[in-house]
Amino acid sequence: MARCRWYRDEAARAFRLGMEGQASENLIEFIDRYSHQLGSRTISPGEMEGIAAVLGELFEAQARKDYLYLADLLEYRLVV
Amino acid sequence: MSSLFELNIGLISGRWPDLAERIVTASVPPSAFIDRSGRQESLVYEGIHLSSGEDRDREARLQASLVPEGSREAWVYGFGSGDLPRALLGRSEVIHLHVVVMNYPAARFSLASLDHSDWLSDPRTELVMAERVGGIHFPFAASPACLRIAEEDAARLRDLVVLELSTPHIRSKYRAEDAGLRERLASNESFVVADRDVADLFGTQAGATIVIAGAGPTLGRHFQTLRRKRSACFLIAVDAALRPLLVNGLIPDAVLCIDGHEKIVSFFEGLDPEPLRATALVYFPVIHPRILRSWPGPRLAAYPDHPLYADLAVRRPRATLYCSGSVIHPAIDLGVKSGAAKVILAGADFSFPGSATHVEGCVVRESVKPAPGTDWVVDGHGGRVSTTPAMRGYLRDLEGYIAGHPEVIFINGSRDGAAIRGTECREEPL
Image (cartoon, rainbow over all chains, first blue to last red):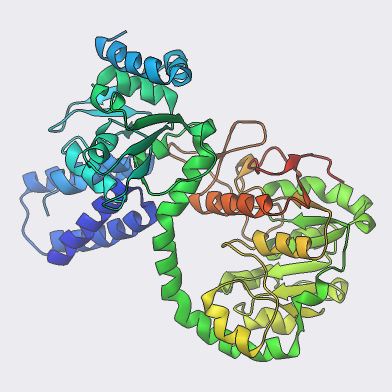
């Protein structure tokens, strides 16, 4: 959990600083750990729907390279 | 005109009239909007949020942290929502803050939507047009969203800033690969001992026209002329361009290979050795030994100016070739050190003209689909051509190299690839 948060924070920090390569690598590490974490605990269908919606927005922001919004989604919208 | 815009532009007109003119004449696209879904307003321009919509101050303080405490002068690339210049002016020790405008319509949108009067009226602020900034200045902080939406006039500066921001990460990645490369250097040392020094080629082409064949998509346009005038020039190819050249009846005088990656071997596999008996393979000794073993012609070792080679350079001194990540760099440096009066760049596109990654016939050629958010660089027509951040970095480093060699004429053989500062563009260069 702590490691997962660490990668999230590092990804958000690097995106806000414009360090895209570093940010993207940390994002990949975070998503990897986060999906693992989701798979290992019980989540209500409602909660899952919320998480899926934020992740959907996150990947859209990543595709259009809207990185400050992506950082907001990571830090303020995604429950980790 | 909003009252906020009148207030902000009034301050700019009084202090920087040229800049005010550029902003007033810029038109904001209708897609620009204010996102109010977060705790704070965030401006969205071309689909890109210019700031956090949750905690703009915190974000600006983080971005400002790139400027060391105690700095008296600093540069800000892109003012976004104004929070970053404000954060730096909050430091009493800052006596001069240069704020560079990277996109005029976005600047207009921001000035019409938010109150910037505090930092615009601060006597320490100097608002600057990106096109008037010669190069990157330090120390700096940047609004990454403004780098993303930078206009053509600001593209070169954007690339220099992005390159600088990514350098620590690139270095740490290379350091992680160092162990494997050290092993490769050790196992290839016997080749270095047996082979000639690249310095043997230096000065051998004094006053010549040297063509550098990169593997970009536009290389193919030069095949016909090159065949006709082959004897009039010295031809140096990067490894990826070798096969396409041979298929088109062109035998280079020298081929550059510098990358230890396994995939590079595919550039050499299955080639007919006969035409290459007199072609020099110039290499950095990290390359795969299979390439060295199978090369039918003379081999010449060279080193980049890199700490990884320091020990080997003491034991087996060899000449160096300039390299900043791309094989095109040492290929060009070899041309210059061989004595070229004129260097013609063919297929040095640093981009994907025609939506292809490489020249036809190159085994790693792929087609690229244009997508929103694709990275771009200014081409020789003044438009945009898609690229990657890495290639932009190689391009800007090459421009720095060219600027250091005023004794050589550099010709860019295509307008469809990236415009290269310091070159003259001629599509029939020979």
